[in-house]
Length: 113
Length: 114
Image (tube, rainbow over all chains, first blue to last red; front, top):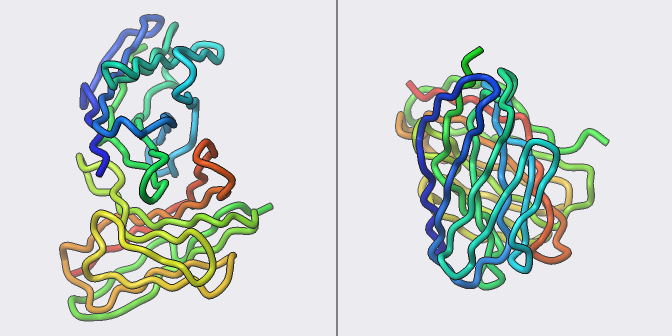
């Protein structure tokens, strides 16, 4: 089955700086890679996703890049703000098997004012 | 639309007790899943369903049962609760139209087993 590794597990940045979270996956059949944000005590919510036929996608201050050859994808947050503080999860879904998402273990991002 | 709803929000059980966590969605989604979330472990798949009458095991199915008699509902049953099942449980749903579709999560159930 799919295995998703996520790094770092914790990340602290100063307000206004950029944050980068990296994930690797094992199943070459995976072709959908969403990122979820989970605020304390809340449910995970999708913030951005990327499909395997796209190398990069941006949405305002958030961008995701995908390198299918190396099997890794990254989340980039620019001009971080205190409200960006949360736990971020990457995930991967494959065409093969169950079509279920496999999640990384999460990154706790703290933005220091 | 209410989206994905879960009840109860909080539950305390004693070891050996059984209970059912309820999950419902009003988006006519074919796919529904149950995850548990433990500190440092991310979201781990317990059971999932690709349509009414069809269920399958995920990564950590032991100690849990599911059924899917309708498109809307996907209850999770704990047969004999153990302290290791103390966790936050999330139900999720997504459209079955291809692999590139968003998964929506419910608000979660925080379960403590004493």
